[in-house]
Length: 369
Image (cartoon, rainbow, N blue to C red; front, side):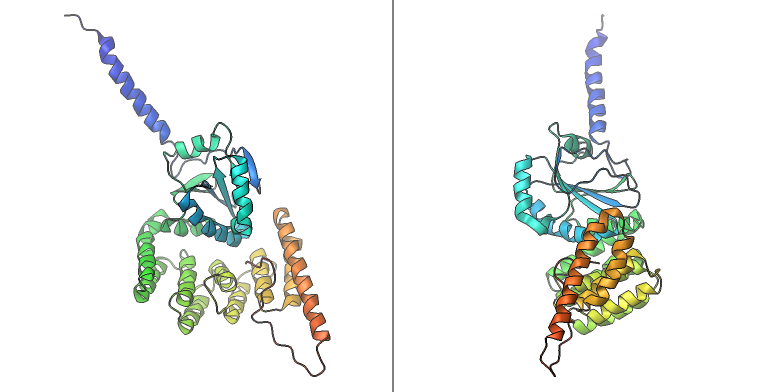
């Protein structure tokens, strides 16, 4: 009997082609080299590439019509404000028209201040990032460090908040992240039902895994003790413990000071604790360290000590990389203006009058460590 092997070959060829196609769809994964950053047009800001080995990048795919994307914007903006001087670059990419995205971003103003771009006409970013990673839903974020993909997922996922700060300090450990993620989720769930004891217990369990790795969780515990638990005394006691626990780790201390100064969740700001955090940082960092100068100037300004703040801000501006000089100079000008205003007010005060200390003042503009 005559057998036509061509008829047998067709299904095999199709199956082989399907396997190849599936493999191509999933070529981008954690550990892969990051694809090229090839956008069509920048709506605001501009990032040339993802090659700086000292920076951590978040490439987030979003759209103006996407509800969850809108929920993630405040979180990403907060991360951008806190992390852009510490080596973090967040990039939002939409495949919508330039005019649509431009209008949306303009209406958001300072609440969406990180770099935003639209895709190329041939959807280069969609193809080389989203489709290559077999991702269909947005928002979807890719964390990139050293040219490698470290994490892919929703920026609202609790794991994102664990991976990003560790990536920024070169301490990303998948095994520790795997252990910590369910604990962080449990802490969030406990806070929602006001089971504060369980929430704090879960935070402690994460910190105990490795205090230096999970310093940001220690700061989050402090923030939640004030905002959710309403335990001012307990928060201060925990803050004092952090000064000891992280005496040789300046980054968590900088984050603690920044949280005290800028967290929207905190009403009563403990400037004394923030000052002590700066003092602790000063014991392990050189006096002209950029992080130390920035935090020190911010803490002084927050307490109304603008003349002292401008001295450190000036040093920061003079020693800063070119990409940050404009931001630092703008902040320096604000401190100088505030210092002159305060001096004038003191000079013109009625004889025998007293001027209250400015411990509750915050300068206009950005003062984020």
